[in-house]
Length: 84
Image 1 (cartoon, rainbow, N blue to C red):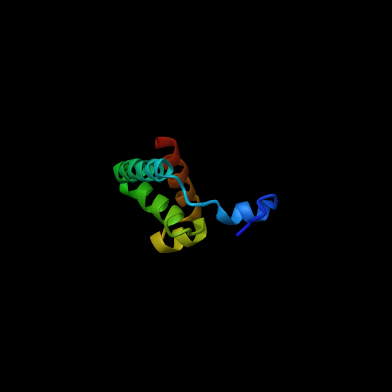
Image 2 (cartoon, rainbow, N blue to C red; image 1 turned 90 degrees about the vertical axis):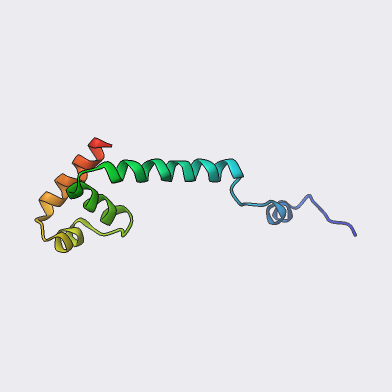
């Protein structure tokens, strides 16, 4: 059986695109660190960060959920980022 490897599309199909084990470890390690940092935030900041990043809520949606003005939500979010 002969395979013409001069065609790059064949090589692209054969090459494993999965992340390397070291990349997976780095990603999990980063997630663990971020989780610790987020849990150390004051509750008012933590809630906003979790809703923004985990739930992908807009500032308006977060304001509705937390029953806060949008400006307050934005302040909490940017103060949380500054803290981190």
